[in-house]
Length: 311
Length: 295
Image (cartoon, rainbow over all chains, first blue to last red; front, side, top):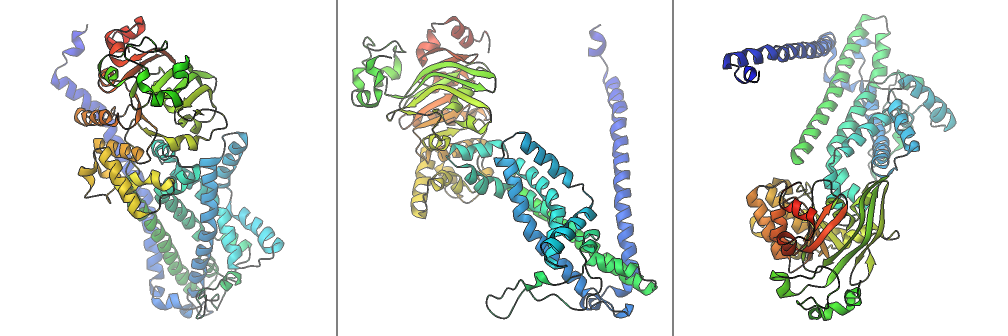
């Protein structure tokens, strides 16, 4: 019976299509539900922190050192410490992570050795952060005698996010289409020229996004910093990176003791005085805000680079 | 190979007329030359594949190919999908070296300096400095139109802005794209239409003055009007550069080429003057293919 299907009336076709479309609509509803419940949890958390911390969310809170008196305690040393650690982490991670990714993606021969390296890099992304803390305590603090400093913290967090950055960078490099590489090779470019003139610039959006995602993971890390001996009460700032005399830049702060936002929060949360809970909530709101800001920058960067390059 | 063309490097270049249209002295190679090729003479041998075989891992894709590419002529490679024509084309600029586990056997000689393109010791970069390529899909860099064409020159160490501008304009004029883009050299190469992008890619390849220009199905992603423009362009380039073109479109091969090789299953079944091959093929398989019996 060939005619049976061929002669289905338009009503039958419509009925058939709308019956099958039920699943599409159903999935849209389920998808929206799941997405909004996840967003809702985050929103509730953020609003709750802002509400609880509201009395302390002011400029003074940002410009004062910690204190025994909750109403006078601020997060100056914490956010300065966190910022400097992030700068250090970024400066260490970026070149190492990108270089490793370039090697693995563009240069490394495909054999069992590089396969093992790849599997390990991916696995390292899942290692608990406290393990990195223990490694750093043994290696950086005791073995290399770097002390309980901003440099040690930066190195530790770098180890933690390197796998993330390497994986993200490799994916960004891989997204550069093969015809573009071939076009450059066909003009007589060397592998390095193809990488430096084409692959890297075109994948920069993805690389920076991966970098910032890694840093947003690092900014909230507490366990490894406690392990390497972050101080929870610091009433002074690290030495200034900018100096009045030539060469105007100083790296002495790398060797200074530090505290960081999550450490400060942890410290306040563990105090009995309810006033400190307000401080902890306020610091939490600011930390969450910093993370969201970094993710926002990542999205903006991706958007900007994608707009310029659309294959 | 006979002596007469055995030394095309020196002899044939000055004494091109020796290979008269009568074809009587000519060696056992395509010598029937009606039409334009006859009027202009057979041309000097620019490159010659000798027993060229190519392997992807354990798979042999090309089986002992022999062909002569004439200088400042267009040679077309036709054949059904998977016959190895693109694989063969990509041997000429060693594109296969980007894929691991590939192997060439035999030789592809480039004249006049007897340079074996696929010899083991030869760096593929060196080959690609001399032989340009235009790809199937237009693939401009996501850089400015100017930088697209200037890139090959920059790789070759040209730094002077004035000279770069000169050369870029020259290449764009040769590729018949200058008039359309001269006022927006700074906009992205990706902002152009497909046909313009492909001509930009041709300009990019021409800027480096390649000795042979390879076209890998250059119009398969373009509409008929853009295709016609590219074909016109290839016809104009004939006087300036040696062209090898892979095409799926037999009419295109007939329109633009002087010589045509019909390939099938990794072998060259027939290689001849284009008009001879299309009007009076000597092999049954060629005839079946060009008359549309398969392919």
